[in-house]
Image: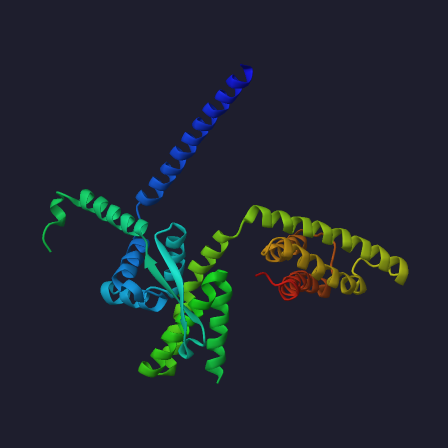
Amino acid sequence: MNMTVTSTHRIGHRIVIGFRYHFFYNTVEMVASEEPLGSLEHVVLLAVMRLRTKAYGVTVRQEIARVTGRDLAIGAVYTTLSRLESKGFVKSRAGEPTMERGGRAKRYFDVTADGRQALRHTRDVFQKMSAGLRGLRGT
Amino acid sequence: MMRDRLVRGLLLLCSQLAVRGDREPLVGDLLEEHAVRMRKVGTAQAFIWILRQVCMSAPALVRARLASVAWPSTLGVALLAWLAIAVVETLVNRATSAWLLVDDAYNPAAMFLTMPLVVAIAGIASRVRRHAAFALALLMLLAVASMTVSAHEVMPMWFRIAYFVVGPAASWMGAQLQARLWPRS
């Protein structure tokens, strides 16, 4: 009897702990994907998405310069890409080393499903915030 | 020729500032774009471009590097190493006073004998925490600077200069020794 009560108690305890973990990780996941992107993160993530399979340091920097006219430092691009990777918004893979690069391999980046979700979320936030603002109408 | 060396120096600086995983692709990207610019706008303009890139990149790279270090434990290891160095220094000072019959607090022999021990301690500290030797060098510089400012007794100039150089240099050598003897995978 006593054993049954103890084991029932243990099972109940495990369910409670399991529920807490489930709730905690779901909350963390939700916060990670719904956290608004910083302006540089937003621009870099969009550049990676535009470049599809050809996104690496040089092309990301050049794409941002071409589209926005903003001449970013390569260090800023890399630190932003690393931050996005640690948040799970991009994933990287090693590319081919070339003579021009002194035999050093490229590091290509791809946007993940979480990254696309974060971009959608950020776009929605900006659309909602700017909706109906008279000063922003027209060119 | 001189410009090539400067470019190599700038690339080395950039790779040292970057976190380990970013070094190879970052330097490769700089080299690739530099080569393209050399063909398009000439060597001088390409050099100015790479100089500007390294200067503009430095703050972001340093910030990322500092953020990637677990500072409390690194600082703890550096403090322990510093304590070990203080003990070693006292013992060596006493030993040299007894053996060489020198009764001078500013003893070059003691400094000479202490240096390899500082290198060894910094190497061990660097083995425990990768950036501990760097933190140790900073601690030493701060300690010597505060001692120089606050000390009432007159220290010989060679002693002051040597202490500014020897401690941090020994710490750096320790980190290099560690990296060569037990490279991390």
